Length: 245
Image (cartoon, rainbow, N blue to C red; front, side, top):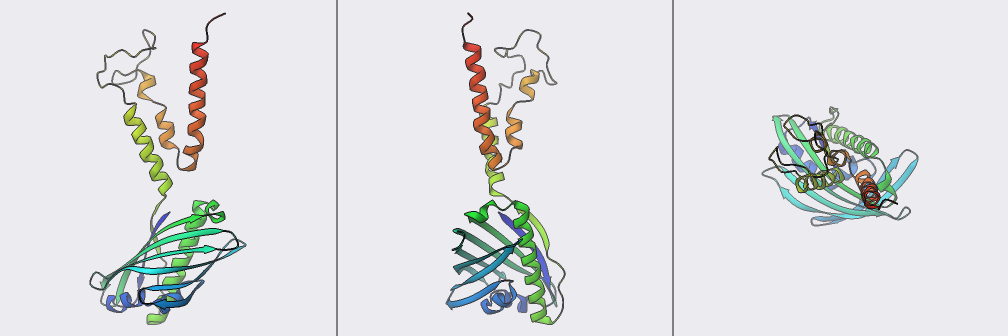
């Protein structure tokens, strides 16, 4: 899942950006985070989260993939796991700071998160809620430490689910593969004479192809329904081919 948040800090960008790359300050400000060690651009630590009544502690390592003081941009890659649940997580965080005013900086956090194991069963909304709460508390803590002032709540700019993107790509490729001939007068085999036709001269069954159902199916649901649809089509084909007694 990919989450994009925006919040503002009540300090100038020349003060905000170094703070975003200060590991000790970030660890102190991010809820549930603890910095255990750091060497150059690499560091290790733990992150505690609680979803409902379920507490989880992820231990792992991270490193700076990029630090650009001119563009005020930093990229961190992190991996970790929760031993009790057997889950693992990979995260890529891109932070970009932009001056809004001499004493105000806009920060955009783009977080790409992948989880395997028990925690992967959490719903999309649960993960969004956890992300929103974490970023809001982080922004507030940073604002208090840097300027002793409160920060406005972070704004969720976008949410992208890779499963949905993959499903849409597969559906588009399938639709392109079965696209009918463009000529409206080309006969369609198996259609009785005088079959009702939709606008544009195409038979109604072609104008509303079954692929639209698959296009609407997202992620795991697409994987579940595809074999079912295939089985139904195969059964109908066999019944039609069965010789009459």
